[in-house]
Length: 169
Image 1 (cartoon, one colour):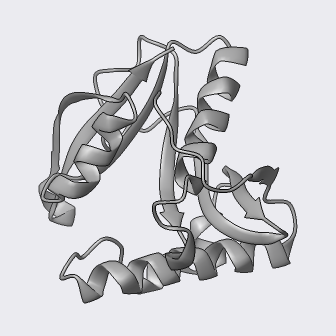
Image 2 (cartoon, helix red, strand yellow):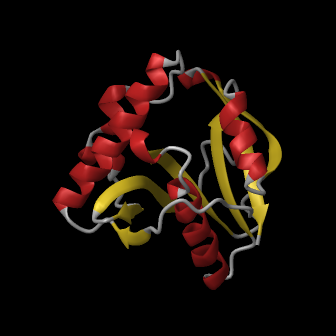
């Protein structure tokens, strides 16, 4: 995975209610930024901490000087987007987002490096994620980071068409 270093980040787990609220604020910040560009990423009501952390996924934050710069959570499965890929052990990245002032400064890459290392330590073969297929710039970022395109997942009931990306570990 190629990377660019601008800042040093500390990766910490999301443990407390305040951590969850901060995580949600980063998601909301990123969502607003994308909406201003005409990109509909997430429904606002789905970014509340109690919704994001329903099911108690493993959330992480990349901190810079104590401030959450980027966030994501990981799961062991993703049956919504990755049906048919269950045979190969993987970790799945969800809700990866970066605060505006840290965009392009290595925060998301730091989180993805952490997730890849965690997946390796757990004996997984892949780190996987999905993003809106209609976002060529975001897709190019993942490809530049070493992720390979793995296909399209269409979820008509939710109106979603996502591009699937993975990196072999």
